[in-house]
Length: 338
Ligand SMILES: *[C@@H]1O[C@H](CO)[C@@H](O)[C@H](O)[C@H]1NC(C)=O
Ligand SMILES: *[C@@H]1O[C@H](CO)[C@@H](O)[C@H](O)[C@H]1NC(C)=O
Ligand SMILES: *[C@@H]1O[C@H](CO)[C@@H](O)[C@H](O)[C@H]1NC(C)=O
Ligand SMILES: *[C@@H]1O[C@H](CO)[C@@H](O)[C@H](O)[C@H]1NC(C)=O
Ligand SMILES: *[C@@H]1O[C@H](CO)[C@@H](O)[C@H](O)[C@H]1NC(C)=O
Ligand SMILES: *[C@@H]1O[C@H](CO)[C@@H](O)[C@H](O)[C@H]1NC(C)=O
Ligand SMILES: *[C@@H]1O[C@H](CO)[C@@H](O)[C@H](O)[C@H]1NC(C)=O
Ligand SMILES: *[C@@H]1O[C@H](CO)[C@@H](O)[C@H](O)[C@H]1NC(C)=O
Ligand SMILES: *[C@@H]1O[C@H](CO)[C@@H](O)[C@H](O)[C@H]1NC(C)=O
Ligand SMILES: *[C@@H]1O[C@H](CO)[C@@H](O)[C@H](O)[C@H]1NC(C)=O
Image 1 (tube, rainbow, N blue to C red):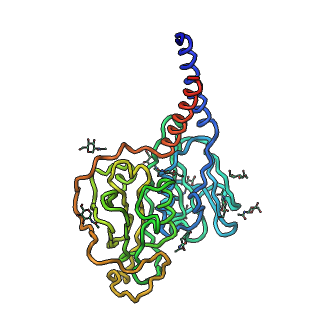
Image 2 (cartoon, rainbow, N blue to C red; image 1 turned 90 degrees about the vertical axis):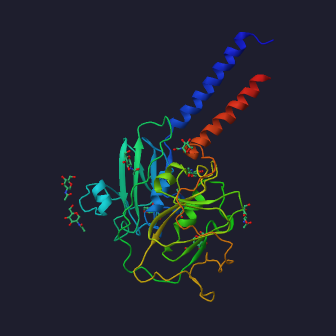
Image 3 (spheres, rainbow, N blue to C red; image 1 turned 60 degrees about the vertical axis):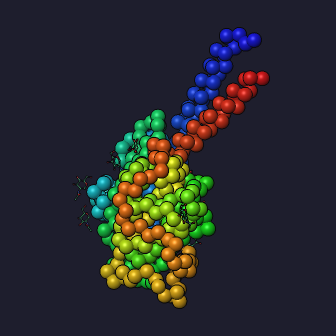
């Protein structure tokens, strides 16, 4: 029925459409609103908020960073890596951007570092490090910088331990929006030694693995620090610093079922987890004391065998683009059939 030429035309058309899609993706500089809906603030959880945000972006020359903040309460200046690490902008010759939105066009490949010069904002976590690639052939997962979390606020409040329900009503799931919902959930919370995380999910449809930062970024869950399978999973935060959690079910991590938090330790506050039901935790997201021992508390079980490994780390934006491409190609293909 179909002549050979017909197929040639169709294939050419398909290739052309694919090329157009590719071109349109690369042509316009992507606008990155720094921190997403969090904006440019002092994140209560420390610099991990911006490092996890950046880890989920691909920065290409020509893209624009938009720093969104309250005029007079923050600013933005590009600094060198040593200045970024030490939170010292006094030697920076770069212009301090004081008006929001502060737009910064990525002019060349390489690393860029930004901080807020307001007193202590940087050391409290208002700092951003990014890697920029020259072109966008394939999404480059940007490894998160090692945030300097050394300077915990010396006037850190001591308070009763808080029980946090991860994701609140959404629970521990693969959510629409990828990792963003968990980033936002964690972003305005303060996690302290002695607090408890509760992961709610349907039995045998998810699990909770604490993993290394590298495993978190790459979504390779072959090796875990601990693995808990029996919901609700309760994890008591016993050590300060960054903690990374994900699900080892195939693909779940890459789809955004992952949580990074920064735990603040205070010298005096290592009170054991609340056993006093009367105590009212200050956070609105605290939940009442949970049922007793149906929970599994991970005790450092090393390298528990995992379910089938998830596919290699792929940024969801690439998934999105691929999906779009497939969708458009399907439509074109169908159109050509008739
Ligand atoms: C900047 O923040 C304000 C207030 O949170 C918000 O209304 C606005 O949409 C944000 N702008 C961008 C570009 O995200
Ligand atoms: C910041 O760096 C400048 C030199 O660039 C130095 O003179 C100053 O002492 C530093 N400040 C702090 C607090 O480290
Ligand atoms: C300040 O910056 C200049 C040039 O950017 C550099 O030569 C100098 O060593 C820096 N000083 C300090 C103390 O870092
Ligand atoms: C900040 O100030 C500039 C200049 O006055 C203004 O255009 C802008 O809307 C202000 N941004 C915010 C978030 O208030
Ligand atoms: C900065 O970027 C935002 C978001 O793309 C845009 O609305 C705004 O007009 C830009 N501002 C300037 C001064 O370019
Ligand atoms: C940028 O890339 C370099 C080399 O790959 C890496 O060492 C560094 O950690 C990256 N920085 C950020 C902010 O991702
Ligand atoms: C990255 O963020 C987007 C939304 O901005 C989200 O859809 C996507 O799932 C996230 N990807 C990862 C790997 O976290
Ligand atoms: C965090 O944000 C949520 C939703 O925006 C809000 O309901 C909650 O009160 C905030 N919690 C804190 C501690 O600010
Ligand atoms: C979850 O499933 C496992 C294995 O089937 C079972 O042993 C366990 O009791 C279940 N837990 C809950 C809370 O239903
Ligand atoms: C994870 O383990 C499986 C089976 O041992 C192996 O085939 C796979 O290559 C490992 N994945 C990574 C990323 O190391």
